[in-house]
Image 1 (tube, rainbow, N blue to C red):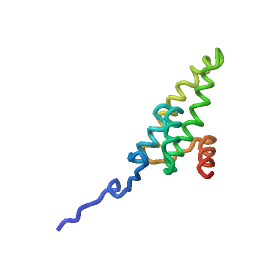
Image 2: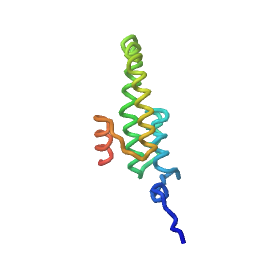
Image 3: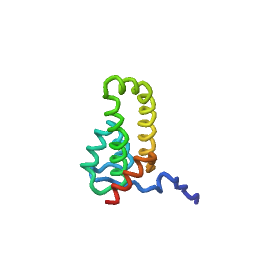
Image 4: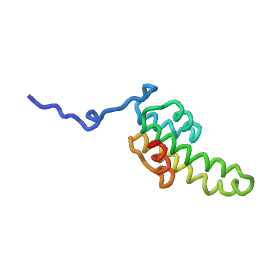
Length: 118
């Protein structure tokens, strides 16, 4: 009798959240609408620290960037430089969250972890 090989994917446990979604999906959704979805998931998700981490990090990273780009003239000028970098960061954070990684942005990630400990 041939033994059936079990892939690493099937061994990996998927954790469900309060909404009934897998935590990596909900982590990705924390970044989907940048800081807005971060606030939504921070309010909804009370127990899952993976999702809460990504929600807090989304708020800490994208809200200041959004505010900065709204400043007349200076922000609009910086938006040409910061805009493409923000887009790349947004995509990377969504991919990392989907892969189940707790990818930390240098300052924002530390702040988010400290908020989880409270």
